[in-house]
Image (cartoon, rainbow, N blue to C red; front, side, top):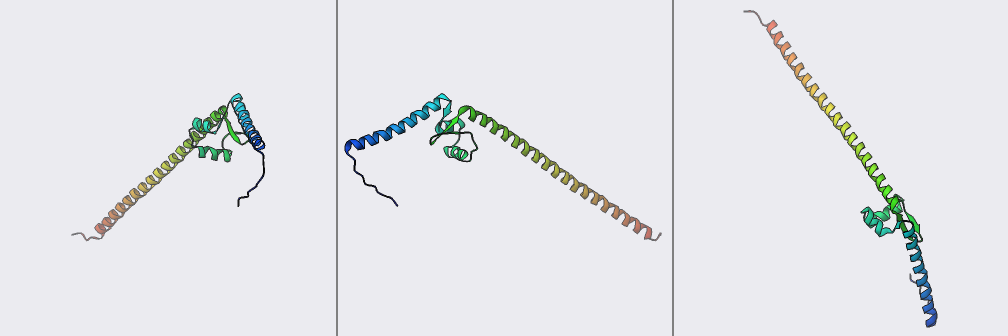
Length: 148
């Protein structure tokens, strides 16, 4: 539900009010830009370009505090040096995960190979056992066969 407030300003009072608001906004922007430039900060758009991420992805990482950032009023700022360190950490973590995944895959493949070898050994043993039983059967038949 919208509320409407009606007030009366003279033309000069209204202009003065707008000037003061614009001045406050511009001062905040100038201060933020000055801080940004002095300390090596970059804004959200510059960080998106630097990190090669979607803006929504970067906002999500800021919201989850997964990435180093600083606030200046309502503005989210980043130090390029901190982003560079963060990128290096991400690469290390990615490599470590890939290495762990590789090791898991290797263990799984070796396990499957051992199981395959066991199955083949069982099949070979069963085949040999069947051959022995067949030979015993023939031997018994020969023993029980009368001599002519």
